[in-house]
Image 1 (cartoon, rainbow, N blue to C red):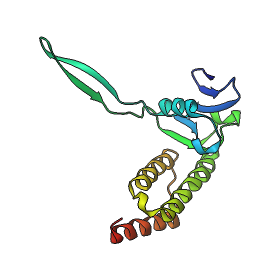
Image 2: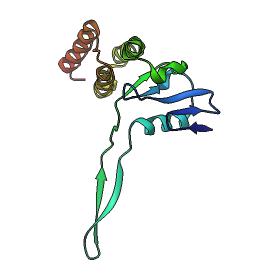
Image 3: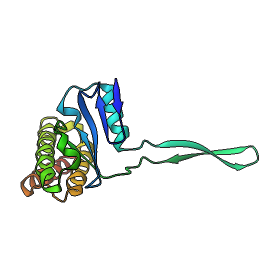
Length: 166
């Protein structure tokens, strides 16, 4: 059972915070899917809370004529994902408090993505590139960037894949 109010979404009866708004920073904070076993319904709710899905509607072009109009997915508020939203003070914390938590969470994910890409090279670069851009955007939302050593590893993997045509 998913519970919600205007600031928070919980998994179950307020047992686990899935999404929380930080009004002072203008951010939406979401729990990482890899942080806990939360179930498919919770993952869908979390993703819909931070990214509005694409919409297909019909537009009248003339008498008896309609065409499909597709609105692309939108991100209405800047968002971040972290591994724990258990602390109730997160709803009003300062950016200095949030930065180390976001960096730690992003480093875990980026290092795993680099390991995965090395371990399974046939998966291609698309998944790595899209995840890398998403993490880069989230870090930018709190005013920090990806460390240079991870950026170098990423560039080496991309160059190697392009040279090997994988």
